[in-house]
Every structure is written in structure tokens, then in C-alpha cells.
Length: 128
Image: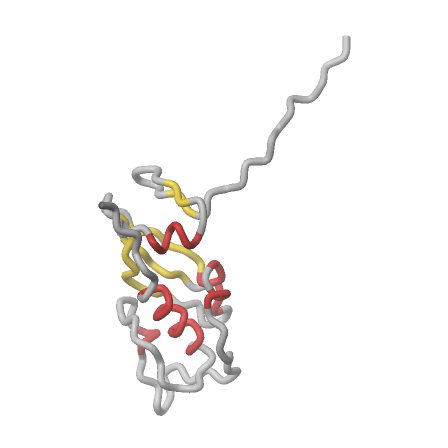
């Protein structure tokens, strides 16, 4: 008797799934345009900036964390090498989780701040 392996059709993973209500977003644009999602914070990892976390509140009451690297392709400007965190001229935006303001410095963190701005301005899909 021959036993064949079960066929596994590859289903692409959802971009994000809410761990509370199990809502799924198929893609990054679908996630950002959902009016039930709101950007509320940023938690940096200064060693590897793309591993920091963007924090989003979902209408079910859960905060969802997404790695910065899931969104960096949205930013097309320069990425600076020097990190000015805590130094002279550093406005300290990255040190406050709920501060989503852009950084005026030519700091290595500036591209993350610019990406936050792109996400904040993302058009929301309105259901009529």
C-alpha cells in the first residue's frame, strides 16, 4: 500500500492578526487603511533600528506591535549614519513612546520618524 503525503497548498500568511479578536489584515496597506487601527507609539531598539516596534491600537482594545522593518520600504529619503540620541540638539522624540513627531536632526533614527509620519498620514478606508 502506498501512502501519499497530504497536499499542503501554501496560503500566504496574513500581514497581521489581532491576538485578541483574531481580526486579520491580508496586507500592510489593508492594515494601515483600516479605520479601526490607530498608530499610538514607537519603541526603538537603538542597536538595530528596523527591529524597533510601532504600536497600534485596535478598536477591540488590544495594542498591536509591528516591527519597523515591515514599513521601512515606505520611506524613500536619506538614511543617516550618526546617532544623536541624548546628545546636544537631540529633541528626544525617540525616548518617549507616544511622541510621534518627526526629528529635525540628521540622525540615524530620523528615517524611522519619517516613516511614522507616512503611517500617520495614510488614508483610512471609510465604510459608508
